[in-house]
Length: 137
Image (cartoon, rainbow, N blue to C red; front, top):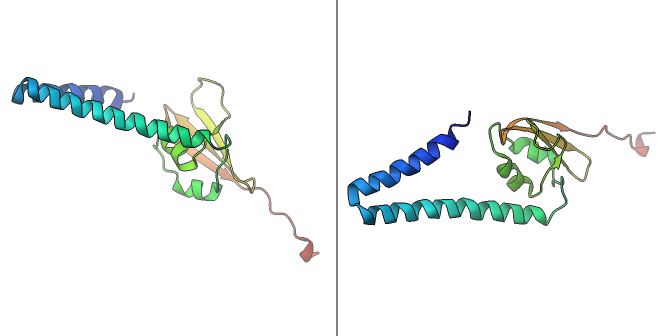
């Protein structure tokens, strides 16, 4: 169960109730304004990330190796999209859990990320087999 879906609204209600208790209506106005500003900041970040991602090919990343190094377990999908500046190619079925996305770099290395409930659970980077150069023949 995702407790942030419960604790964030409870925290907002407690914040506004505390403002009411301390300052009455002016406190409610300031607290509500702060909550609206917080929501707008998150919305603006989401729109900015998705706008940047819309200008790049789907499933493209500059370096799969660098993406592999930067990933951490538990980050959300929006954070990974912000790092790659691209939407991932969906490998899993629509609305299926876990969600699996793939990002590929120009060298054909790719990273496959598995998300459960919107949080990164695991990832795997694969490099293409090295090609033998003609100079070694």
